[in-house]
Image 1 (tube, rainbow, N blue to C red):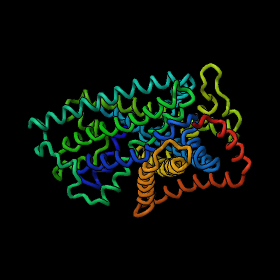
Image 2: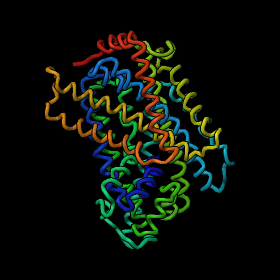
Image 3: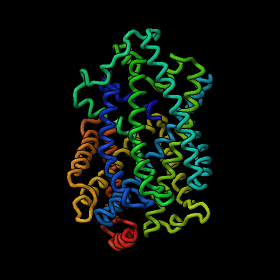
Length: 444
């Protein structure tokens, strides 16, 4: 899903340096992921940031970080719901049909029914569904990338700029442009930590979860760089090719039709929709489990803290999260926003909430490193410090120099996080209850 949409914005900012920008985003993501990979070796909890920050910085910081992450999951689920509509419309277009204007919201509403049906089953079922769809999507992208690279390399492609390996370097793009564009790249990794929310449902989580997080970030980095290199040279690195890339609506669909044939373009569109659905499934599952963790510790309706005794799934939280995210998407649809606009708008808000949440975990691992009993070497503190610097830059870029409506989004994300802070300050007893619960977690 990210490979069909996120490279477009990057190309408009850095020209042919799109693969290089994704390499920069990859290293930035690794700096941020360090805190999660390190701390999940010692902490197991269904709350992700909620527990990692709470166990290292204290209960109030944990609640604040968890509340920010909840905003991330909810807004991401809403943006992905819109992405389902984007790819469904692309699929219909390839098949020769058109969805009437303004009715795109029907697509995520129907998808939501199947999301609930899958998410109320045990997490193993959900995980297998996500893996199955994800691997099909990865295979389709890799096959298309290999075909593009081979065609361009042998001179049989409809472009004449060849295998331009200078795309792996900054070239004429300024460092400021690259760092600004890396925000779109960073968006592609968003939610990598959501696997930590299944820590209490996983066998040997202190070994499995850190390995899973590491593989997710690294594997995504390799695949993203490969696909972005193929897309960039596939469109061509001359002025006409870069313009076509920057103004595309769905890059994988366009290139699939050009390099393989219309039938593969249809396949890509179908797979893209399926992967968007899988992402919606994942985002709502993560949000529901975070609500479960918060409610279990005293915040939110008691029904959210109840899990099905057979499956371990917090059913009430799953249904409520799905309804809420569909409501967010429908709200903008009512005011005439297109599915593409809803995708980018909610994605930006989600990223900004995520920056705050990830920052809390990075600060947490810094403090944990300096504790006497910490097994983490103190020299490693430079990694989360660099991660915090990258996150700060991501947020500042979204505040400065943006045009409406994007200039509004940092304030919306900041407002959400402020609500979390006010809750903690207004209800100190809540923080006490959360702290008591967190001290019962297995922290070695």
